[in-house]
Length: 355
Ligand code: NAI
Ligand code: MG
Image 1 (cartoon, helix red, strand yellow):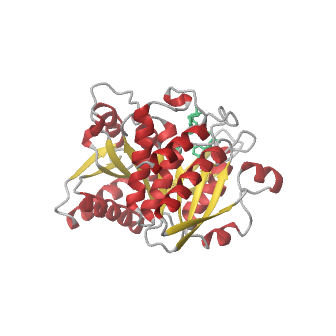
Image 2 (image 1 turned 90 degrees about the vertical axis):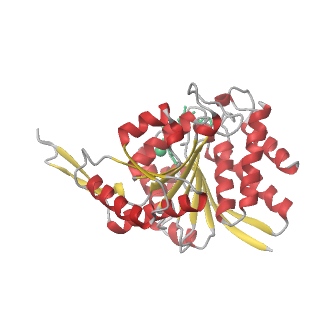
Image 3 (image 1 turned 30 degrees about the vertical axis):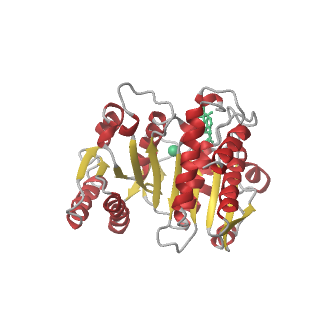
C-alpha cells in the first residue's frame, strides 16, 4: 500500500472549514481505491500563530515540511496582521523555498457551474493557466528611497531570469503538446521595456522548439478583454507571476466564482513537495459562518491526486463536483444555495461512492 504523507496548513478564516472537506474527499478516494492511503499531519501556522509567536510558521518550518510528499494549504490572512506579512512569510516562502515554479490553475466552466458571460457555451471556457510562480514581479526585491522627503520613492524590481522563463514556457509547451492544445503567451512588451521584451524574446525561442504546437501572443490588457469577449481563444496560457495572479481571478469570475477556483504550486522535478490550495483567501467576511464553498479546495485535492499519478481519481472527483452542481443542491450561498460547507463535502463524497 502506498502512503502519501501530507502536511496540512489549514490557515486562517475559512481555510480550516474548506480543507476539512477536501481531506474527507481524499480519504474517500483512498478507501474506494484500496491501493493507497493518506497520512495527514496538521500544522497550526497562520495569523493566529503569528499573533502568539511573532512569525507565520515555525523557525524550522521549511525543514519540517520538506519531509512530506505534498502540502495541502487553506488560506492565510486575517485582519490584524498586515497582508504583505501573512502572504509573504508563509505562502511565498513555501512557493519560493520549494522551487514550486509552476502555478497551474484550471479555468474551466464545469457542468452546472454559473457563468456571468452572455452567449458563451460551456465548452468555450476551458483554459489551463501556467503562471510563473518563483520570480518576476513577486521577486520581492526593491527599496524605499528618500523616506520622509518630498521625493520619497518606492522601487519594486521585477526579476526575470532566462532559466525561470525557459522552464515555465517549456512546461506549458509540453502540456500543450501532450493534450493537443495551443499555447498563448501573455505579456506586456510595449510598456515593460526590459522584463516583457525579454519574456517575448524567450517565448519566440522556445516556440521554435515546438513547431507542432500552435502559439499566440497577447498583451495583458487585450487578454483580459478577450477572456470576457471570446474565452475560447485560450487553451494553455503561460504568463508571469503578477499577470497570472490577476487574470486567474478574472478566470474564477467567469467560471463559477472564487468558491470554485483551484491552484497547484508544482515543483515538477519533485525534489521538494508541491502545494495544493484553493486560490481564494481566508474570506473574513464569511469566516466562522460555515457557508464557505469547499469546492475549490476539493478541486485542488483532485489536482493532488493527478500529481500522484491517480488521474482516474482526479477525474472522478471533478465529475462528482459537476454532479453536485448539476443537481443544484446542496449549494452554498455564493452559488445560490443555502447549504453549509460540510453538506457540500458530504454530497461530493456521496457522488464519488456512486461513480
Ligand atoms: P478572498 O478570496 O478571501 O475573498 C474574496 C470574496 O470571495 C469574499 O467576498 C469572500 O467571501 C468570497 N469567497 C472567497 N472564497 C470563498 C469560498 N470558498 N466560498 C464562498 N465565498 C468565497 O479575498 P480577500 O477578501 O481579498 O482577502 C481576504 C484575506 O485573504 C486577506 O488577508 C488576503 O491577504 C488573504 N488572501 C490569501 C490568499 C491565500 O492564502 N492563498 C489568497 C488571497 C487572499
Ligand atoms: Mg490571487
